[in-house]
Structure formats: structure tokens, C-alpha cells
Length: 295
Image 1 (cartoon, rainbow, N blue to C red):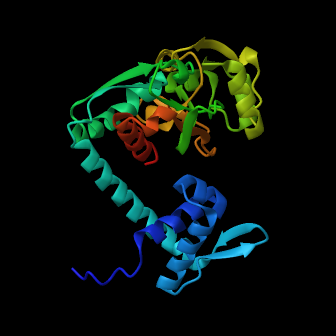
Image 2 (image 1 turned 120 degrees about the vertical axis):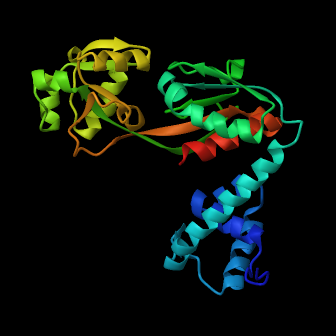
């Protein structure tokens, strides 16, 4: 192994990565707990060490150069590897034990989280994980859960939120339903079909309208607060449902409606109380979920 191959300081690389991710020196400095001048010197030092220009300033905005864009992917890989090493080391400590409560939607809880729990179990086998499966927004301030996975960003200043990715969904219906009622050829055709809702139907209507999908409350003939129940309704030929692609791929009896339509995207926010900074077990689970959900 050539120990002289790496010619830069990791702290400088971290400063560059944070600046690229946060979009400005001031935001990156806040994220890293540094002053803006200190962060700026670290980014400049990395440019000197590598003999490249990483950012161009356009007005008050920093724009990555072509070299910066290319290096960014490598720096992300370095960060992820360092994070995994740190998590593995932290998880082996006997101090990482106790209960952590995670709240997420029933679909997320049943079909996405189990694989994340397998990873957590390997790294921190003494942890006790409780899943609070609910489509309602649980109040972290009242400690109904330690960590929440949501599609909306909480507004309470006492909470820490991180955008970890986007969920992709499509419209699905049973083949029997589509054989009987016809297969929509465009978004306008959707208006004549029966839909199955879960959660708030009016919110779903409002979310779909900017996508050119104009549904009315009368379209939603069946609904349930439970996503798994709603999916079973669709499986029993009652109508069309918007569902995550992971769920849709599990059932051969279901067919994707308008397969050429771009996916419906929902942000995934990982949220915890600020006690996250003081609890090693919550921090460990938060970071592992963050890594899992962005893949």
C-alpha cells in the first residue's frame, strides 16, 4: 500500500464536501460547527494541496467547477466509508444498549425498515428497537417516538431533520380491474377511474394537481388510514392506488398504470429530538437509518 498516495488532509476534504452539499460557506460552517473564515481556509487549503480550482463564485453563489464535480463523488465515497467505520466502532461499545422507538408509515415499517433493522442488529446487538407503525405524525416532543420517518419536514425548532432521499411511487391496479375498466392511456383518462386512498385524500389530490393529474374527491370511492389495508383493497380489484415502487414490485397480480409516466416522488425526512446529540444509541440508529434510506 502506497501511504504517500494521499496528499491532502481529510478535514480539508470534509470542508469541501460540506460546502458542496450545503451550497454555501456559511451553511457548511454551521453544519460543521466552524466559523466561515476557518471553513474557507480549509477549502482553499484543499485546492492548494490538489493544485485545482474546486469552486467558482458567481455573484454570491458558489458553483462547482468540472474538477469539483468529478472529485465530489470520490469525496462522498470517502465520507461514507469513514461513517461506516465510525458507526461500526461505536456500535461495538457495550454502552450502546437500551430501547429506541422509530415511528414510520405502515408501508415503510413493514416493507422497508426490516432490512435496516438487520444492519442495526449486526452493529449494535444490545439495542432494543420498537417500531411504532402509524401514518399519523407522531409528536417527538412528547416522546411518542425517538426517531420519525416522514414525508413532510417538521417545523418545530426543537427537532433535528435531515432530508435523506426521495421515495418513488407509481399508480397500480389489479389486472382484473384494468381488464374490466380499461387501461388509462394518459393522465386525463385517470379522471374516469375509481381510486383507493390512504391518509388524507384531499392532500393527495392537491399533491397530484401540479403533476397534471386532476382528480376529485368523488374519484376516491374507497380509503383507509392503513396503507396495507388500502393495498389489499387494490389487490381485490376495487380501483387504482398510488403506491411505492418497492411495494408494487412484490405482487405479480398488480400492474403499473401508465408505465411511461415519470414516478411520483415524495421526500423522506429523518427527524429526531435535539437529544440526539446526547444519546449515543439514538445517534447510532439515526445515522444507520440515514445511510440505509438514501440507498
